[in-house]
Length: 143
Image 1 (cartoon, rainbow, N blue to C red):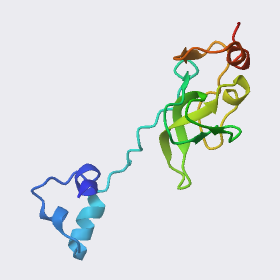
Image 2: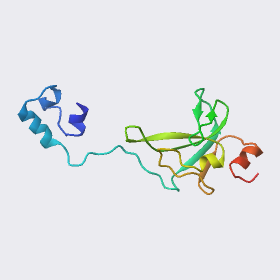
Image 3: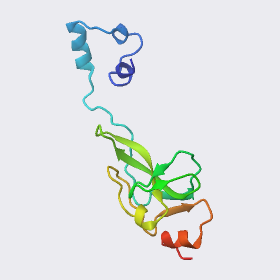
Image 4: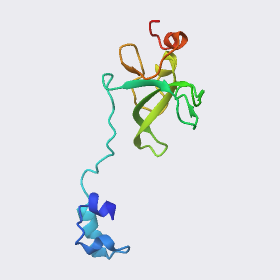
């Protein structure tokens, strides 16, 4: 019913929406109503100015893996996150949160099947937790 309403623009008054089998004439009605362009999901591809990275302490009890080197990030670790498009195994684009070790070399590489802007000095970096001198060095920040 969602497809008939949102894609084919059949309103609730049309009984064809509630059927599970169709006659040849009804199939022709459905085919004729098929839009020329099917809207894609609303996934945007960020520019360097729009891409932002957030540094914080992992609060989730569920572990994550660094998107670049697949290192485990556990509760209490300092992590970096950013949002962006990810290509699924079905070859569709979805919006996803990427997790990184809080190191410039991890954040500076493009994760597989993603379309984000890798971190580089000058991009938006929001720091939500106090960092040690070592963390600041790992991020390429002045200590």
